[in-house]
Length: 193
Image 1: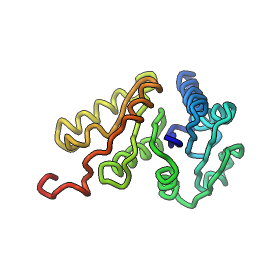
Image 2: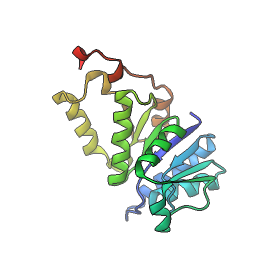
Image 3: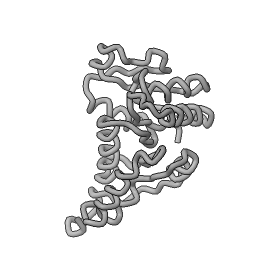
């Protein structure tokens, strides 16, 4: 994996565990020679990931819509900063420029990015690993919900393993490196759906 898209929040929660984990992710990826593609912001977890990766000599590519540049939240110190017109263009660029996805804690935008990466993998628009770093139990309920989708039958058995989950970055990166493509919906027979 040469580059990973990092999805995370632009907020700075009161508990420092979230910012600290974002800094660790940025620094660790840079030290391993893995570039970062992220939302291009300078605030919150996004800024922490970018700043720590840059401080460690890493490549950081920001993808940000013009509206957020106009709101003065863009990180001007990125290796590259791509300004796009829409959020859809932003997510397409994440997919085009990265070899996989890691979700850190975040809000609705982060959730949107996670679910799109998962659904695109399930359909067959990409065959890249999708990882969830469960910092301080932040995603415990989402992980339970993901399992519930499978139990009920809204998530096919062959797609339950798309979401790779770990509480430690090293474990998550190992799972992502071992990722094998799944049988996508576009390659399945209608009778199997």
